[in-house]
Image (cartoon, rainbow, N blue to C red; front, side, top):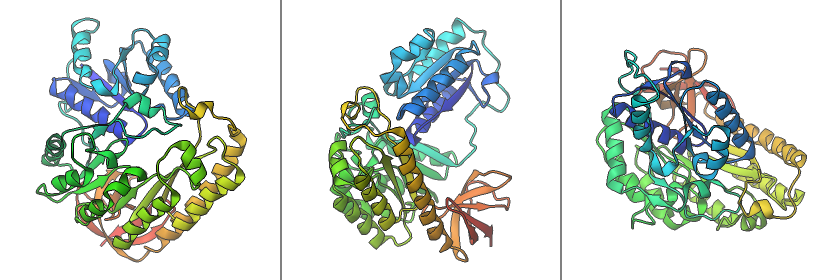
Length: 419
């Protein structure tokens, strides 16, 4: 069978798509890059906000129109199963907890509905277009955020055994991957259910032989503060990208309390200051939700002030979207879309001004980068020790570590030349 995967959303979704690809390939099927060449279509969905949900349903309708067997995985497969089947009752549903079902679905379709196809030459294993391996370390979370539909889709925290995660990382490295991306809904929560923790896992992965880098995925402040000393210590490894993704979601303690985020702005700032004290050139990424119910102009300005003061390199800005079944959807003082859009536009402008000024500081500096992916217009992209993207024009094999001089800066990337 020839199988086409189309993932959306967070890194965890992309990681689970790759896990299903590996299962498909190990069972003698092929992965194709174009839905037109496929026998089976797999859509890995995201439903974090309303606009994303609507996009997913449009895509389900488009793929249904091809008349090919369609599999829907990802978060919608759990929380919107009935709505999906209402569009197309013949869709095969795979929730995040049952990824292995893709094997049985391929087997049934091969025996029944479809005539088995001949594997495309050169597609007998997964194409490695990049050199980053996404390694999920857990399902679910410990949080009770009042706006989040994802926690209904993925449930309570279920950490994968440490030795299994290490074995997976080891396998990818043996296959030639150079970047291990540890991912989960909240990587800082890892291990609370199995008497382990994230630093212990990171140390184990970092001691694997070889020249590679580890990127630690998103960590909620409420769990970072519990392990911060051990976490900072394991970040000292030269194999760890000095990249910290800690979503604050609001600069107002009033809003954070309504969100049920379980930390204060003071605690968030303390986390950032502790990391920056140890890692001067660290890249900070955070998230902000604009227009949460009850967010007045004054409360929004607290978020604006926070971003202006802590100056993160990356700010993922999302306008609040009411999600079915969440407590926030029933709250009073829902904010109009126009107000949220205006606030978002203001914060986006500031976010890019901040990141441009930060990046301009690196012009003329020498950086060692790991070349990780193919860029646009015949370029390549590499990552510095702090995970800053550097665009180069020279032809260098993916997976190589090279020295570059930074020749220019944009708000979201650096420009460099090989030296």
